[in-house]
Image (cartoon, rainbow, N blue to C red):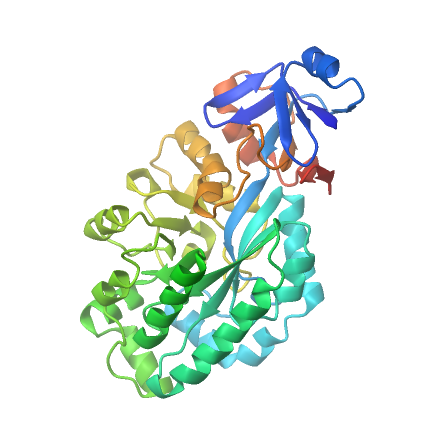
Length: 402
């Protein structure tokens, strides 16, 4: 048993003071330090530096570890030129090493991320995701636009799913991801969704990331027409927006991006109990627009996406970018929502027993030390986002890793 002491503890209702946390693998009690010492006289007391805040471990809900070797290879600024550069440099991307992926998950770890959702396109990241100290929801991804290749694509996909199932534990959870409406044949979508239902797996999908995608799946025109005609000889979309969404009507899905969704799309998603991952830096670098979180009426998380469309996997870099991008939102309200978007909200969406400082939740903690004493407790979220690069301490399942 251990007792963790800090000046502040984060809760969804606000920051509390003069309390401490008793824990082993799980959070056992939250009370003042003297009370906890009396209840657990043999517990190790862990003090933190002055002005420290105990947060539940942060959750990065959407990341592509397999693409962690890109620095200056891919083209940024607009989605279709970026996608063409991905296709052109696919061999380089495939050479991402285990060391590249380790650097990526360690960067997340140092910024307080104790859980992440990994989107796996080919299974090359499986060993890394099993070995990482963090909890992982492992989204086996399926894609393939040509009907004649569907059987091979699905067989490869199910083999990867079955392989990942072998590693199921309280720190590794297999799941399923549909790549997108523009890249995944309806036959593959239907089979993968049915498999997710059968195995009671979580499911995610990219949707309405770019205007090019929107033009293609809504009106069969635009930049995607030129790309698909050039590379694949395809002259009409394999899915419409409506047909794609319908496949997820009875399975709660974590959609990624939605930067080009309209009001009616959001209303529809809410009616089906869906959620969205907000990736502000990726959206900016690929010219996809801004997801208006202030008017978003569905649960949303903040995620880094992968290093194919970002320059770091540091979750604080992502939060700072969100603070600056959403320039018309109330500053402190936005900061509070952003902290929730990497704690309790993704924990609920990804069905993880963490994300909140509560009894019987996993003892996953990220300790942030502020540079000075905050004059206003209700601004701690903002000060945390603005002034933090790396956490002071980090615990997963009661074990310290930072």
